[in-house]
Amino acid sequence: MRPLSTGKASVARLAGKVLDLIYPRNLYCLCCGDTMEQSRIHGICDNCAKKINWLDHDPFRASLDEFAFDHLLSCCVYGFYPRRIMHDLKLHGKPYIAENIGLLMAEKVQAEMSPGGSLEDIKSFTAMVPVPSTPKKIKKRGYNQAELLAKCAAKKLGMDVWTDALEKTAETASMRLSSGLERRNMLHGAFSVPQSACAKVRDADILLVDDVVTTGSTADACAIALRDAGARSVSVLCFASSARAFEFGQEE
Ligand SMILES: [Zn+2]
Image 1 (cartoon, rainbow, N blue to C red):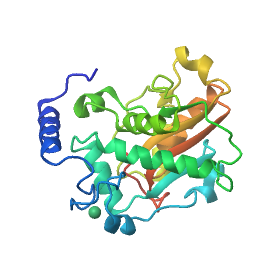
Image 2: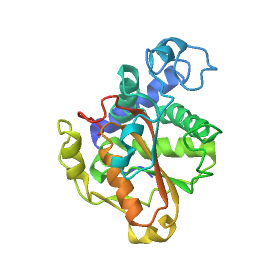
Image 3: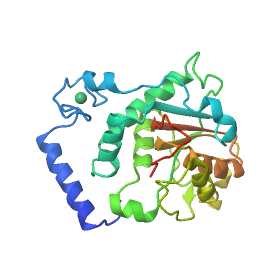
């Protein structure tokens, strides 16, 4: 069950529920708010979909050697509309957005695992593991957006989600203005695999899920923890990733 949250977050959620009744989901575009055909199950109208920079390659492919994860699957570049959608999901109390975006992420996995895709060599993943959030953030929002996205994507793919395989063991200061290298140093050791999950993580092929990847620091720190616990492979799935991957980031 949801933990008790702050008054502000509760009001925002309540307002979101009321708006849900007035504006049923999928009738209005998540990006521009215009009406759209109900058949657009991803919640994005054709006009806005054209303005999003959809990715058909791994944006980190030139620098994967520097990271502990094997692949990065990202639906699109973290531009204007993806940023708006993620802000609505994370900051404006609209968790239902995870259903639309989780579906897009599931389709990305399916595309990459089909012949010719970057995951052709990985026959199947053992489970999805969402990047954990801090108790403080979960209390404020009422949910962890990475976990919601993982659960929605996993439902479509028929995969397990392990929410207990990673924990954030260190609080980190705000990293908004930190460089990629600084962020990686700050995050190193911030995540770990609890003793209770070590057995199932060993030899597992993990699909780590986050909403946005900018510098890759968070995903790297999680992948290091999973690898240290014996995971055979760690790939990363996100909705959007920064085109300026190594300059600065706003992952959280
Ligand atoms: Zn639109």
